[in-house]
Amino acid sequence: MIDRYVRTALVLAVAGVAIFRTAAAQDQIGLPLGATPEAAEIEDLEGNAVDLGPYIGGGKPVVLEFWATWCNNCEELEPQLLAASRKYKDEVEFLVVAVAVNQSLRRVRRYSDEHEMPGRVLWDSKGRAVRAFMAPSTSYIVVLDAAGIVAYTGVGPEQDIDAAIQKAIP
Image 1: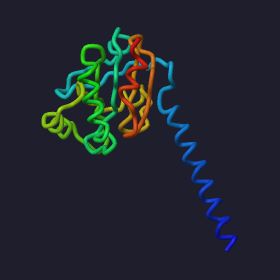
Image 2 (image 1 turned 120 degrees about the vertical axis):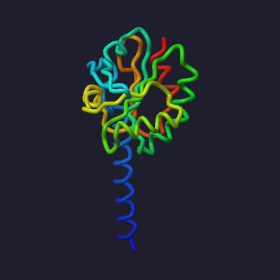
Image 3 (image 1 turned 90 degrees about the horizontal axis):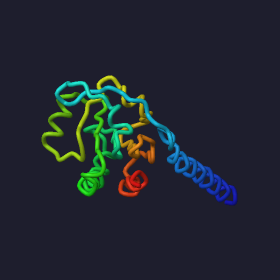
Image 4 (image 1 turned 90 degrees about the vertical axis):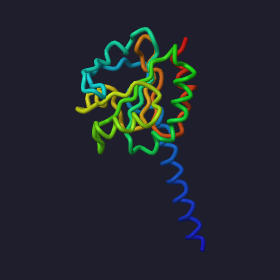
């Protein structure tokens, strides 16, 4: 009987350490805070080249969401991102970077035609933005301040987008 309690306690302790490490790692996801990302060239939904360089340090904070049509976390973040894009529409640029994993440009176009999106939807067909912004997964949010410096990064549906944006606004 005592062995059972000891084993249960050990399992809970190990699980607690794993959860703590995961939560602590959330602070270090993707680009480090204070970094300036490299510019990348991706495409708009019509296939035209879009240089992300002018958005990095372009005098206005930027919110980038690495997104996919199939991403449940992205779907859960959508209401917050839409609310933030309405609230900060004149102060902050919002970009939705559609990753080319398990989705086609055609599917992204169709989805964005049928749904309100929080910002300009771009297509990262070659993974250039994913690499430049060190995106670990979809639902990855990067907030850059007006100088192009990373003020926030996060992944998953539990992000506070409004608080993240506040870190980039003087």
